[in-house]
Length: 55
Image 1 (cartoon, one colour):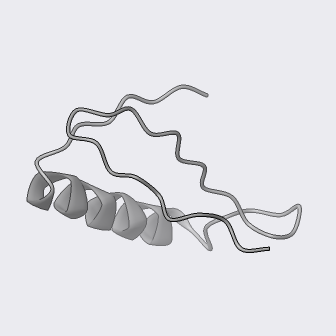
Image 2 (tube, helix red, strand yellow):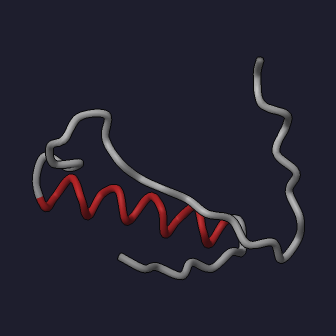
């Protein structure tokens, strides 16, 4: 059974996970990691959102 459609709430808090499907590095190298972070930054600015990170 497919999951129901996600509800977007202004000011809502969302839990996002980034991981690969195998137990190995997510990025090929530092340039790849920086590119991914740059795309994330662009998306957050476009959506006028902020991000809190914990590891």
